[in-house]
Image (cartoon, rainbow, N blue to C red; front, side):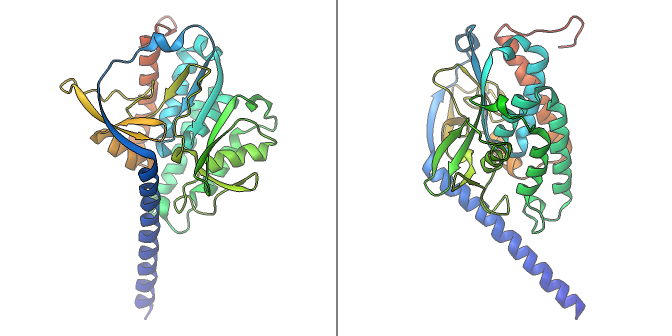
Length: 315
C-alpha cells in the first residue's frame, strides 16, 4: 500500500515537472514569435576604435540566465586591466542576469569573483535537486532575492541615473528602462523583476509602480544608448562587442537571429548556451564561462589598444 502511495506521489511530481517545463518553453515560443526575425549577413571583423573615442562610454550586459558568470569574468578583467576605460563609464545597463552584473558594477565592482562564487553555490544546490530549477520545492526567485540583498547597500544614491534596469510590462508587453529608484527595496524589486520568467522562476511576478513586470530580456535584452557609445557584453556570439568569437573561417556568410534588440549567430554553440542559460550545466562548465569572459574582455582591450598590464603579468 505504501509503495502505491509513493508511486502516486512520484507520478504527480513528474507530471507537475513536465507541466512547468512545457509552460516555460511555451512562454519562450510566444516571445520568439513577436521578437525575432532572421537574416543572413556577411561576417565582418569587429571595429573597436570607431566605438570608443576618448569621451564617456556606457556598459550594457545582456540577459543570459546562469551564464551571467561570463559577465563577472568580463568585469574582473575590465577592472584589472582596463582601469582608464572604467573611469569613463558613466552609465551601466542590463537585462535579467545582465541587470545583476550592472548592479554589481555600480555598487561593488571589485567583487566580481565573490559574485561568481555565490552563483556557483546556487547552481550547486540546483544541480543536486531531482528536477533542477523546476523542482516543486525550489523557487529561483527567492534564491536570487537572498543573493541580491547581499550586494545592495543602504545608500543607493550611486545608482541614480547611472544604473539602468530593463523590465517588461507583463500586461502590455512593452519595455521599460528604469534608472531612478525611490528606495533600496524598490531597486531590489526592479532587479528581481528583470530576472523573472513566468512559470520558471516560481512565486508571482514582482509589482513595480502598481504593475506586474517580468524579465527585461523579452523586450530589450541588450540596451544601447543613442547618446553614449555603448560597450555591449554577452556570452552569446553575435552583435555584442565583448562576446565569444565563434568565427568560422570557412564561411563567408552566416545566419543571424534577432531577439528584440540583440542579434545572435545561429550556430550549435549558441543553441547549447541557450539551454545552459536556463538549466545550469556542471560547475566546471560554469567556471569555463567565467574564464571565457575574462579572455574575451582582454581581447577587447587589446584590440582597442587600451590594455593595461602590470609588468610581469601573464597575458
